[in-house]
Image 1 (cartoon, rainbow, N blue to C red):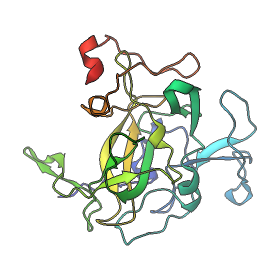
Image 2 (image 1 turned 180 degrees about the horizontal axis):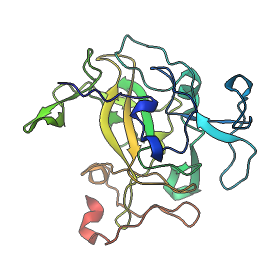
Image 3 (image 1 turned 90 degrees about the horizontal axis):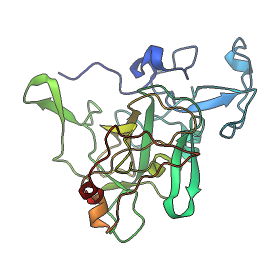
Length: 269
C-alpha cells in the first residue's frame, strides 16, 4: 500500500506549525512550498496582491510573506513535478531563504530570511548527469528516480507497510545544481560542535534518464531568521576530498550547537 499523504502542497505541510501559509488551499500542483512577499494587507483579495522584493536580513518591511500559489506544470511526464513554478525555479525559495558569504574561506552559506517552522519543506534540484570528480567544487547529490506511477521511491521495509525504506537499486547518476536557480546547494555541513537543522526525506522528483530532478529537504526544528541551514553530508565526504570538518557558524549567522562536542577523531568522518 502506498501512503495517501500528499507528496507536496498545503495538505502535506505541518498545518499549525507553518506560519508562512496562504489563506486558501492551492491547487494540487501549485508552487506552495516557495515563499513570496506581497505588499497587500492581509484582508486584501488575492487579485490585489502585488509581489515585492524580499527584504534584506534584519530589516523591516511593509510586505509580508505568503506561499506562492502559481501553477506548476509537468515538465517531463513525471507523476509529480518539482514543486516550484517557473519563476521559483529561476531563483529558488528566496522569499524564505537567502545566500550569504559570512567569510571568504568558508564560501557561501544558506540562511533563513524569516522564522521557519519545524517541517518547512524545501526542494533541491539540478540537472541529471555524471558524478563529477572530488577535485572540483562539487554540490551534486545522488539521484534515485521515483516510481512513475506513485511518484515515490520507497518500498515497505522488514516491518511491513508501516516501515518504509529507500529504494537504492535504481541509481541514475547525480543531480548537479550548478547553472540552475537552486539555492539549497549552499546549505553547509555542520561542524564537530554543531548539529544539523534540516535533512533529506529521500523523496525525489523527476523520471529516469530525465533532464531535471529534485530532492525534498525539511527543517528538523524551528529556525530563527538569520540562522544558517545545515545538513549532514555523509560519512567520507570530507575524507574523499582531503578536507577537515570545521564549525561553520559565525556571530552573524549562527548554527545550532551540539550538546556535546564530538571527539577530534570525528573531524575526518
